[in-house]
Structures are given as C-alpha cells and as structure tokens.
Amino acid sequence: MKSIPIKLSFAEEVKTFVNIVSRYPYDMDLRAGRHVVDAKSILGIFSLDLSKPISLEVYADSCDDLLKDLEPFAL
Image (cartoon, rainbow, N blue to C red; front, side):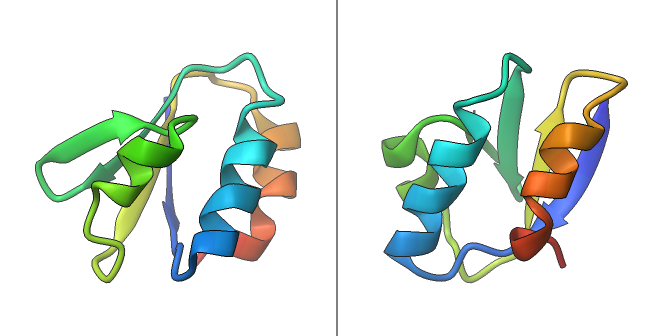
C-alpha cells in the first residue's frame, strides 16, 4: 500500500482527479481525518472536508504510472 498526501481545492480539480484515478484498476481510498471514501467517487470526495489534508491510499505495490499522472495534485 502507498499513501500520498494530495490537495483538492476546486470542483474542477476533483473532476480531473476522479477522471485520472478511474482509468486505473487499483483499489484506492481517500482519507481525511477519520473519514474514508472511495477515491473514484465524486460524491464521496465532496463529502470530505477539502480544506484539511487528504491522503490517497493506493492498495498496490507498483503504481508508479498512477503517481506520475497525479503529480499536479501532490503536496
């Protein structure tokens, strides 16, 4: 499992983020504090407090292709 801190500030960023992660077969969650949602769910992401740090948890050991595509969102 890999954990990556990310920042999603605007609705357009959330849409772009979901479009990117949906292309990959990995299971992924977003964690904000004690709340965890599916990273491929737009509604789930909007239920999080986006002003706080968010961590993307990818349940795969080798996901360098995904991490490269998500560089604009990395902290």
